[in-house]
Length: 585
Image (cartoon, rainbow, N blue to C red; front, side, top):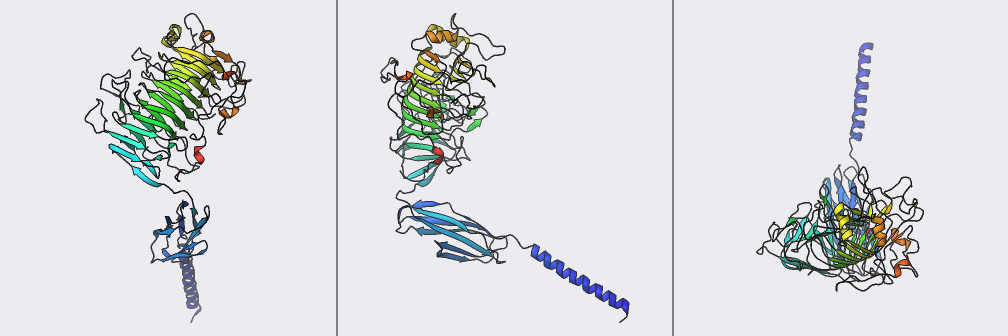
């Protein structure tokens, strides 16, 4: 063999060797990732209950085996023929084990390349309390329907009790009565903005107890719940509002067929007692949201007592017209207003409290009370003229060092021709205590059709020069009672010939204080803890109350929502984000 041929042979062999090495490397590089497993959520149940042990498996190189262990011992195994995914499920009957003990199931898979997955775990706990069975609810409910506490009811989209969804009330439309047992939990679907609407002519009977309240809340697990996770509770009645006439109604904000209004101020939409609404308030359209509790033209035949709205994305409570009365209301850490009243609402409210979070405020401006006759401030009748006694409006400003959202405005924003009447109330922690807004509203104060009687407005120690941030940096609006409006340029306000602050101070029992120290309020009212509501001994608020006229009002000699009794005991919840609602209580 000559030298030239030998050289060519060597080169050829070298090229072939390189090709083999390249192909081997390429084949090795093309092996897909190892299998992955996601185990089912932790669950619990009684001894003898059957629970599902589940896992979802992905194996790009094709599944070969799955091994399932129970407390480290063989429980199940499965062989495959190259499938790339599988949803594994097997029943497990909870054995006779001590209450509180756990059974740990582990999953591990191998693929066709003998790659193994990491270990996934599902824990089953032995409980002495049965878990609730979830039930999806959609569409329209008619007839007599009862929801029981052994189940969790999930609202999918707009769930309506009754079929009256047109502008003119129809006496032939199918009606419904939804009865909810004490202790029942209802969750709203986040994706579809789950909302419960009681249509005109239908009823909700949701009478919980102090030991077993009814709870409407987020579907999301502990640690993930947030404002606006679902819609809210909406009740539409046939009482009078000032935007519609006769049997014709108006739609609630968002135009989701929540028609309300009529001519029967004694209309009865049912009963709510010991009910909580948490993490509600989805936006339907810009600046048109479902509130935690929305009451459209609800009549005085309806019962409302012991209601709590927590972490709502919009108002905690809003009344659009109507005459319904209510006692024992809690608005806790909502985003917009605590108590919003308009369109001719004329009900009575007693023992109500609003508490804010320092950073939870809405771009539209957040208030304790926001009260209008209507959006134009017209003289449309009936005039918005609720009567409120024993209210505590606790703003976000705990101390002068507490940083709060600049969107906070007023403890009471009384505007657009309202004729509200407020007795025995305390306002503190807001940049403004009281703002009587608009010429016609100021005239109502001068004529005596707007009343503030025994109202205490208190600032925060060392917050600016007046307890309301005046002169501080950055400077908030800063008045106990506003004497100038918020227009540019600002204009002086007058109640007759008086400044509003002078008029306020001249009304029976009213007080303006630079600090809430000495009122008897616990500082825990400003904090994210279960608050102490009762007044300390010797506090200013403990005496001096009066009783508004009318049989609805309970005699109370104190100022604010609480005296020596805490009416939130047992049924309320000030930390719903950590509450496990899966078990029957």
